[in-house]
Image (cartoon, rainbow, N blue to C red; front, side, top):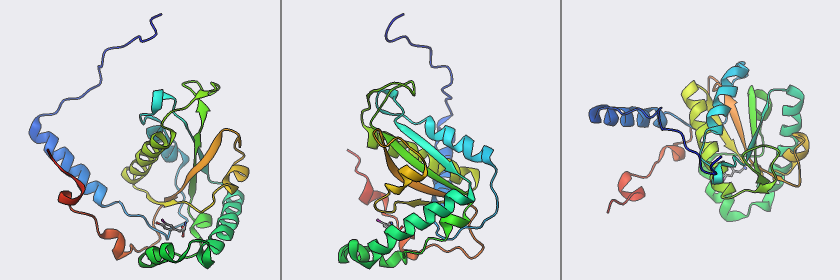
Length: 225
Ligand code: IYR
């Protein structure tokens, strides 16, 4: 077999140009309704929805298509409690000084603190791990490339898939996150915790910090040459 066997691209869909623009702006409108929230309802969310969203994340491009990620979707109340206890312990040290003054000042408009009840109340926590070694087959032990970029893209896909499905999320990065390795029973040699995503319905009184609604205008984020 050729090392670079190809198949025809037969699932590309071409839209008329007016439709492309309306699709792009409709997607933008939907994306603008995505907000990071910190107050979740405990309403259950079926596992199948989470599975489909993780499959979307798994469709992301990655260095050499090695797919250097693993998603641990946590529904178990016992595991959620362990994560909350460990995360709050780290966050207490963070907010009590480890963060430093500049970081704490940057967080003031968000109103965050060490209390993380949503880690126990939200129906799903998704711990995302990056892998240093792997390959196209899970058992491979090749070097992975562009690991951070790849896992970042997959995480973006996951956030957008969850939002599209009708769920709210929070990207949470307790620092350090190494406790996730033990709690999720991951391979310490090869993996690093990348992010913890909280997913569920928003609580009825959920709010969004005004600070988070300020998005830079196109002129500031893009240059057309
Ligand atoms: N991990 C902490 C602090 C925190 C840091 C950043 I940068 C944020 O954008 C938000 C929070 C916490 O979750 O409270």
